[in-house]
Length: 153
Image (cartoon, rainbow, N blue to C red):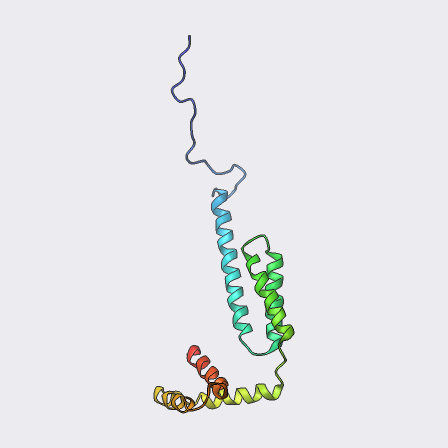
């Protein structure tokens, strides 16, 4: 009769690195680092494309839609696949949005420059008090420009 060994089923709590791995780091940390960098790159790309899409011109919205759709198709199995749907939505918006004529863009740029002259808080309050006298439909564009100027500061 033979004595049974005391430790029959050992559990390995921490395994060593893969012998094929040259860096010595376990694979799961390297893949986690790569995934984190990919998420960061996709996030920065999305933020850049959103800033690009904020402009009112249709061709920029179309470009943003194409970029997001391509990124979503290329990275569809990873975290980048999340941008596929917003890219397609931007393509649809660009398809149905009427193009802004050059005269409208020039008028809006001139209006933005004129409204930038109201830079102090007191001047802003006076201008907003004047705008409050009129209906929102008539002052929508002015309020939009003023809100964007406040956000950009």
